[in-house]
View 1 (cartoon, helix red, strand yellow):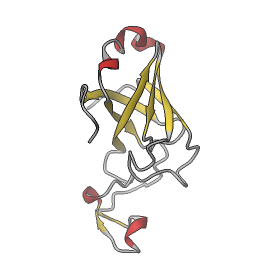
View 2 (cartoon, rainbow, N blue to C red):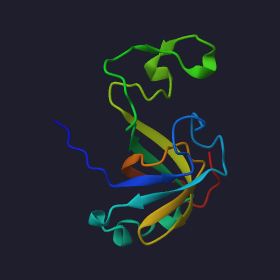
View 3 (cartoon, rainbow, N blue to C red):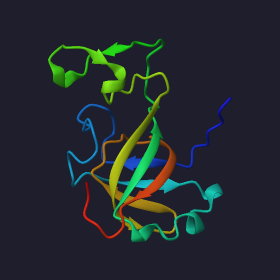
View 4 (cartoon, rainbow, N blue to C red):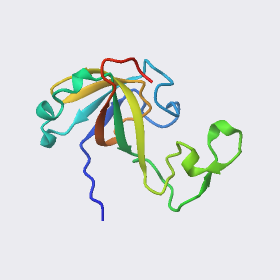
Length: 138
């Protein structure tokens, strides 16, 4: 059994999935905050992160409503064609986890400001990992 803890939540400019970019970076100016729960001591846990340009954010697809696994999905951008779920960013996966690479704009005592956001309001965050230091983005 795997036990995962939610470390925080997204405060997003996107209130629901409609109109949310299908992947990070498509709307570079889309900003949000990653609010870290106090029990994870964010004032300490976030120290040193300001030296990085980007963060990998691992999150839960908390609005995922699928009840059973489908090996093929119909991404909206393919005009009805289906493809294997592992070749897509579909939220309908065996495990409802996602990964986004977001630009780190600033680090505060209990939150991060990020841009290039593709997450909706309230998305639970499982982990944050630094990416790139003093180098331009991907």
